[in-house]
Length: 442
Image 1 (cartoon, rainbow, N blue to C red):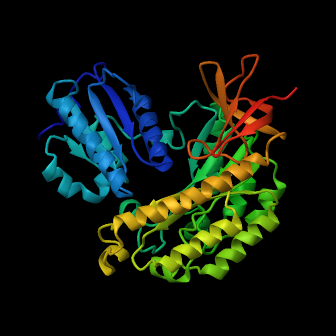
Image 2: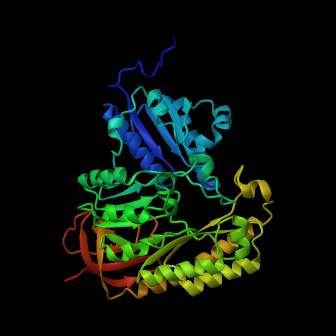
Image 3: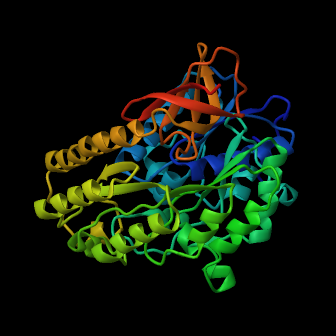
């Protein structure tokens, strides 16, 4: 019987460097992997620069072309390091590997092993350790430790024409309220004060295991966890949105008046082609209801331009919607064909790249002005700010209206040292398109 040659090595020698690419959901997966490795007494680090690790695990992203390219380039970089003797073993996991494993094995045979998004036990076996069920809910926090992501579900049941996530992550699988509350308590015990609820689709939470939407119940349960000061919602699908959560957001002090709701488009023509299950009128009614129920809420959305069939009239309709509704935070992607998706199989990608990019730029130019005006309205106000980091004596933090890495920062000039991860009252003195400037209020 052939044994795993890696497993036979001395664990004292092994050091594993985990590289994470892509979204926050991938980051959580890496944190769980690190917890399992360290729980097995293996020395494991996350994205350690100039690392002396002899094994590298690359957690890949396969969402869009740029993400795929970054993942491939990272793999090739570490394969080159292996050939130069800088590392002994390169292992690849994550979405790109899950979706294109067979092709990648042929194209990059120098990689030692490939694993998908649901293969954690097998990946651990390859690394010579056991999967410890007693570590469920535990993670090694890779950020500063005062905020963390809480993955409430995995996978997606939506039929969006452009999206390959169901091919990489499978069907929607909610995690129980009890399990998530225990994980939140664990995170708080590690110093976390803010959690971002993430999933491919928050809106669907609970249907698969409870027979109905239970996001409202989950929010109430998490809001009761002592020590959680901010709870933030990301990726709430607009179709079937559970409007009962709005009263909870309004009433519970530690649930941020912040919602990430990816609208993708506003034109009926494009929404139908995208198979989004919602139309222009229902989208307008939903956005209006959210703002009516939760006064002052900050809305973040993502849009997709250049989907097959999008006309210039559709694009102008989208620009008018952005102008009329003044969405606080907004990002834009340009469409690219994804293998084995409905759009990839059913439509020709006939819109030229320069047209897609121009539409992208139109939106971002419009949004820059909207964001600047929204920020200017905050000058002179005193806001609660969490300090995230310090650089050369300047501090950077966020308000309730801002999620880490994707939203505005507050640049704070302080006379005395500030504590990372602590809250301060900051008076806003100036504003830029995507950042605020302030000082500690006296």
